[in-house]
Length: 86
Length: 80
Image 1 (cartoon, each protein chain N blue to C red):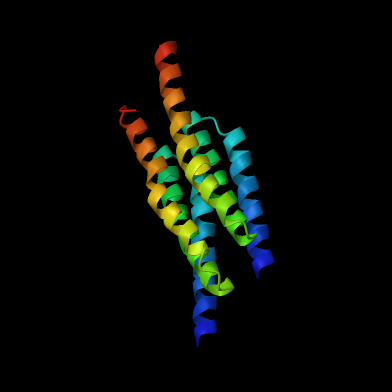
Image 2 (cartoon, chains in turn orange, cyan):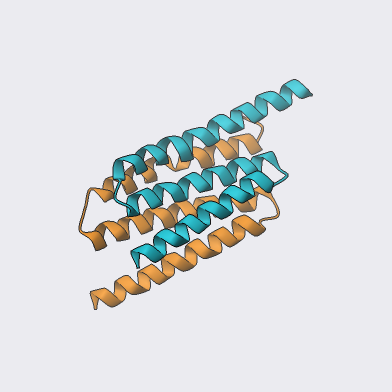
């Protein structure tokens, strides 16, 4: 049962990353690309957390934590840039 | 399974790098560089280097995009 749940989560993470990269490649405006980057960040955090459980090494959760804390910085900078604030 | 994910992440790094070089908009190029750094951090975790991944996530994906955008804003202000 747990194996099947992990497999479903892996497939969903792969689909999320694939569509995020697709939006990044196709994105017409910069805002599309910013949204794709934000989604890819969340997908990456979930992939790291899933791998931490699958490998049984919970030190990897610290990486996911640091990434979650710091990932808003780039999005915030891009938003300030678009609003002529930076 | 792990090798497949590493290969896919390396392909995504390649796509982001090509986008960062080829795109016309400077902002989109900076964003694509940040995405390449993001995938590189996940790749480091999967290859078993969490400390390198932590540094890459904080500096490469966060700070470098901020510095790039600051530099773009300052240089375009000077040009006008």
